[in-house]
Length: 180
Image (cartoon, rainbow, N blue to C red; front, side, top):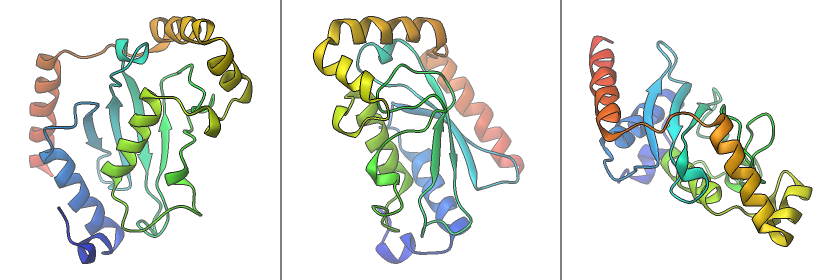
């Protein structure tokens, strides 16, 4: 684990440290295919792979945009795959307090943010919803909510890669990163 002093270093150094830690982490099976945009450490992409139904039947492309003054301001995270979820709006923004400026703590690491995000995807939080009507449906008619969520997973989610496909991607990423 990184020391507190390391977590307060300037943005690019901090992001490179966090990136290295995340690439070494073999335990996080819900966030895969992490890539950094070429020549832009401030933009990362990845694939969310939730573990609870109905979201566990698909995968969801996402991007992380870091502000120039990271870690003193939170990153912006967007899910680029459509999702019927009460904590995700139609623009792919996620409603999680850890990303709100008034709750952000500069020592928070991006892997911790992703853990909170995935916990919210796996267990929707109706008290912190983007969609009040959908939160009501989730509470009052869960059968209908999950039927609709399942239909959206089938219609919009990305192909959920196999372990062989993930390993192939990891080899390709390693080769690309070694060129830089």
